[in-house]
Length: 93
Image (cartoon, helix red, strand yellow):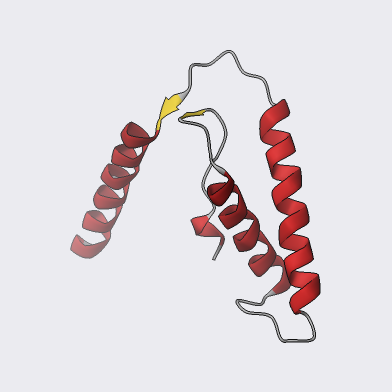
C-alpha cells in the first residue's frame, strides 16, 4: 500500500497540493489498515489526512538543500528502467 507514496521533496516542478494529499491519504490508509473507513471512523480518518497533509506541506516548505532539483520525467524513466530490469530478471529466473 505505501509503495504509492513517492518522494515529494526537491523536484522541479515542486509537489502540488494533490500529490501531498495523496501521500497523506496513503499514509493514513497504511497506519489505520482501512482503505475506506467505516462511517463511525470516517471523520477521524479525514481529520488525520488533513493534519498530515498540512504537516507535510510545512515540512516540504522548511527543508533546505544545496542539491539541484530533480526532473520528474528523468526520475520516472529511471524508475521504469529499474522496474523493467527487476521484473525481467524475476520472470527469467
